Length: 351
Ligand SMILES: O=C(O)CCC(=O)C(=O)O
Ligand SMILES: [Fe+2]
Image 1 (tube, protein in one colour):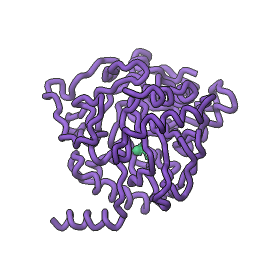
Image 2: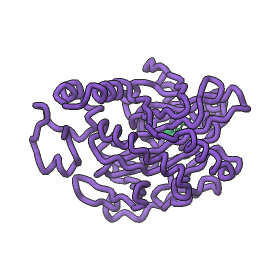
Image 3: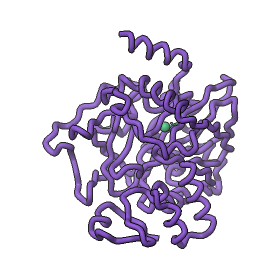
Image 4: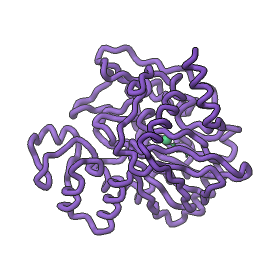
């Protein structure tokens, strides 16, 4: 199947069709023509079922096929034990920890992502969590997104069983089909200070749209892939004594412009471009738009200066333009209740 390899390839072959349909610069699993594309594809029945489920629900639970998973999970957990230092996560441990890196690069995950996205999957960030994040529902598209849109996904691997008590992941199946909410769509300036208002706005949207939350009880060794715009978060920890060791790897795909929507205003020509590092090679990945390397938007814009980082959030390989994971909004565990958030929002609105 060769739906599309890159934006540049698309432009070089204008009018080329696949399965009698125009090619689109969008992952085929998110295409309005998915049904026809699937019918014409030559995937195995198993792969077709996977793609169909992912296209419909925006997620897939898969087996990363790591023969010594238990040993690897223990190695990840043990070798990071002294790295958390009271914090609820370690970002980009792949830069110094071979076990984290090996899990992030599981060949079976790479193979599945190639089927689902038809481009080279680029693992660019790892996050390790020792216990539930209790993070509010969000879409990763406010933290990192790309042009063309939706060539991004998260892969969440359970390093131990998760259930109702240890702060499991939750997702909203099918939410990838709903609008991609950016700060400006909610009337918020592109600035992480407004993250709580964004979360509160999303909460209202989820309720109004009637989206159904699903708690995900993954067994040790299972992985969940979520599509770029799937709403997800961490449910409350009911048993404070329980850990919830997990590793998330975020992926972009080749030949895109990678940026941080929360710090960008694309409609007036300001994009906070990211300089991502490919975990496989340790090398930077250029930002591409229609086959051209792009370094700044607009081209004469000054180098973006990110907001200051707190000590805990400074990650080993951060560069100036990778800063938004460093914001207290990305994936940091929080113990606030919805009531606290609503109170804060009301206070802010009253201010
Ligand atoms: O593990 C969780 O509870 C959520 C993690 C998350 O949102 C992410 O890594 O993007
Ligand atoms: Fe997330």
